[in-house]
Length: 174
Image (cartoon, rainbow, N blue to C red; front, side):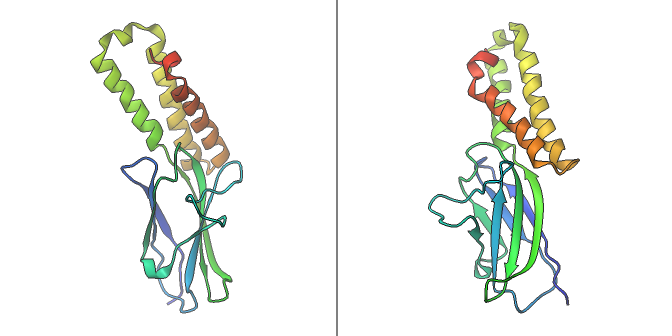
């Protein structure tokens, strides 16, 4: 049966981590290893601390799923490339998919809900809801840029705008 490359990505409960699962079908006896490239909108690659290459090894012996822990200190829009290689490290198959990771922003957004329930006076600030709505707009726009446009750059722009609000939360959400 011919090999059809495929993979899925799922963000963990920990917003800094996610898993990649190789869901390929078929087989190719020449495949002996896999590599993952996580490419940002600025065309740099993310790798775990201590990795000396621009890619992440994903050995076949490790099974179908790899979890990348602590790799997202903030939210990113990424082009994720999975390669399947032969014994000579020649790439036999490549699949690239774009993803938007928003768990850090979503966690902060939920903290705003907690703030307004524990401190109801914050809703009297006329800018609070406007700013909370703007944060929601950035998060949703980042997701839409990937879902509708496969545009990592536009998605990251929105995530960066959300991060500015989070970094300056005492200005926006008090």
